[in-house]
Length: 212
Image (cartoon, helix red, strand yellow):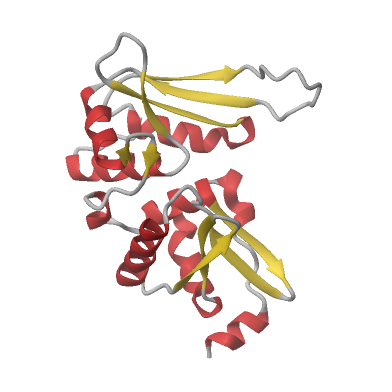
C-alpha cells in the first residue's frame, strides 16, 4: 500500500481517480457509497496503483470481471477493482456527481498537479500521429461544455498548457496546442505507468520547430 499521511493529498488523488475511469456507487442496502472501476487486464498496473491509494481509506479487492455478452465476440480480459462501502466515498460522490452526471470537483482542483493530470490522461487521454504531427486529446466526453471550459482554464492556470475545446457530434473534448506537447509530456512522464507508456510518443523535429 502507498501510505499517504496527508489527508488533502489523499482526497486529491482519490477525487481524480474517480473523475477518471473510476466511479462511486451505492449498492442496495448500504447507506454509503463504494468505489468501482473496470479496466483491461493489460492495465493491471493502473488498477494496482489505484488500489494502493484507495486502501488508505478502506479494504479493496481486484477480481476478474466476467463477460456477460452473448454475441460471440472475444474481448480482452477485464479486471474489476471494488472497495468496501465507506462515508469517504459518499462525501466524494456529493462533490462530483449531480444525480447521475459525473462532473468535476473544484475543491480537488485546488491541488491539481502533474500526477493528477497523468491520472486523467491514462484514463481518458489519447496521443496519435496526424500528418507528421502529434495530436493529443483529453477525451472526457461525458463532461458538459461548461465543465470542459473549467478544465481548460485549470490546465492553463496550473501548467500553462493551452487546450482547445473541440466538438464531436453532441460531445466536447479538449485538444492540446502543438507547441505545448513537449512540456505536457515532460510533466506527466514520471507518473505514467508502464502499460500506458505507449501514449508518450516520440516528439518529431517538426514539433520542436513549432515551439521556437
